[in-house]
Image (tube, rainbow, N blue to C red; front, side, top):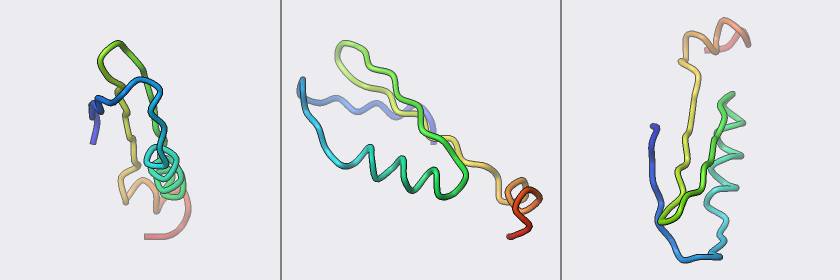
Length: 59
């Protein structure tokens, strides 16, 4: 999934982004974040299962 925009209150903080980053990294992916007036954009990138199995030796 890419291009998710999460509007929120200024100065708001939560565990959601940290949890999402931990899960994404555990699966060999990465999370990008860019802030702008009116919202924050999170980009989640995950490897394809076939590509991951070639690099780790698992399915």
